Image 1 (cartoon, rainbow, N blue to C red):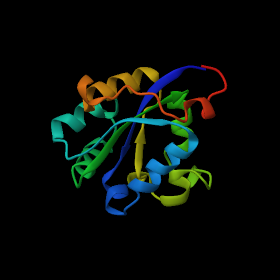
Image 2 (image 1 turned 90 degrees about the vertical axis):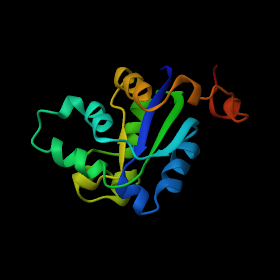
Image 3 (image 1 turned 180 degrees about the horizontal axis):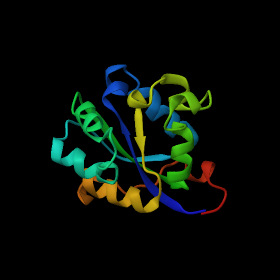
Amino acid sequence: MSNEQTFIAVKPDGVQRGLVGDIISRFEKRGYKLVAIKMTSPGKAHLEKHYEDLSDKPFFKGLVTYMLSGPIVAMVWEGRDACKTGRAILGATNPLASNPGTIRGDYAIDVGRNVCHGSDGVESAKKEIALWFSKEEIQSWKSAQHDWIYEKP
């Protein structure tokens, strides 16, 4: 177990559908700490960089076009095993394979409209956080709930 940060973004469909508050609430209720958040409309080059590992996929161009279609809420969450658990909170990339109770299982049907992006590991989280946030935008603070969430430091 490790204390780490993960990048979570509410995609344009999640923003348009008014799901931002519920998504934030699910991470907070689980015990994760929000350390950075902003609503943004990134440019094409930014999104191509974010999804560069998918650039050889046939859906890449459509994904970038879709992500340009509206604002995105970018966030950094912190806590023990934040990447792995963050992905579990989101559910499977294909919403039809997501369990009820996950964000995608509750709010999505199509892969191309799966509401959120979440880092798939610690290294990708570091890269994504650095792409979306400056160091000055990430807050360092101790939640008053910390000792009620974590048994050990």
